[in-house]
Length: 160
Image (cartoon, rainbow, N blue to C red; front, side, top):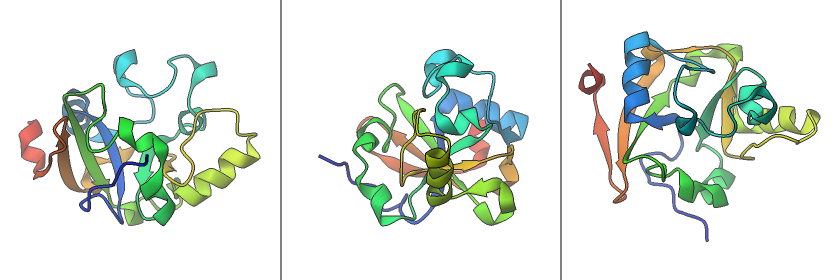
């Protein structure tokens, strides 16, 4: 059964990560497509042949909750509001207007995936991508999800 999307996430584009990785992002000043993080914190494989689709095109995986179809993905139970492998998940709302042509919506990323032969892991109608580093100045808001289903607003200052 599909999991419900918390109202706070709907209608927006987000990048999710662990709390530890969020600290690294804030300290570095950017969300990167291939950050130096542990294998268990990465979605998909660690070798280039196993990379999920978005990573294989040099992109950063984003959740595009602007589409009605994105709210009913069967994969959401692993991610929302907290990834099953983390005690806390940090959600960075991304200001896509600042990304210009580097941002590919879930619809645009789906077309690119289909043209590439649909052989790599990808979440249709849900996963968008950014084909450049995302400056932390483009983070509009931050939510932190926990294993109990909580989702609270936070400020960048908690990571420093």
